[in-house]
Image (cartoon, rainbow, N blue to C red; front, side):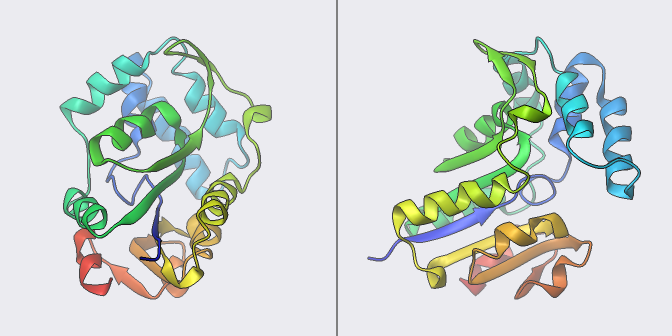
Length: 208
């Protein structure tokens, strides 16, 4: 049986909120994080510095605190559990690749039984977040690079690769997939994909 891969973006795709904003609420910085993010989306702020600033709000926060926060409200998009269950039953390898921090992605990996997660890696002191700076990013295309490494390692043909995102910034990662989906797309991503899904991500199942 040939290996199949499904590539996932995170914020706006399998969750409905910006989860970095949510976890910044642990230290009372949710609104500050949200305002920085708004300026990035509008183009007022560019580059990796704004993301570093938001992550650095979390200095001293543990994975356990993040887990406790997200356990109260997961913000999963409708149909996400059903879709991941379907993919697992049908022998898909699942990859979650995001600019969000690895301690956040780890929570969703455990929740949804995801095979691979790739995220932003702040310096850690045990389970405590220390800080991050631009030099900690391997490349601006790390989402693409991380997914490509797994595809090459597993020797998966492009025809067996599926992917979904919500924003034009997901375009490069989705270029790895033969079967491209967008959910509630922003920034023109809908022009690049095969199928657009609205709201319920499990609608993808009928196209697989």
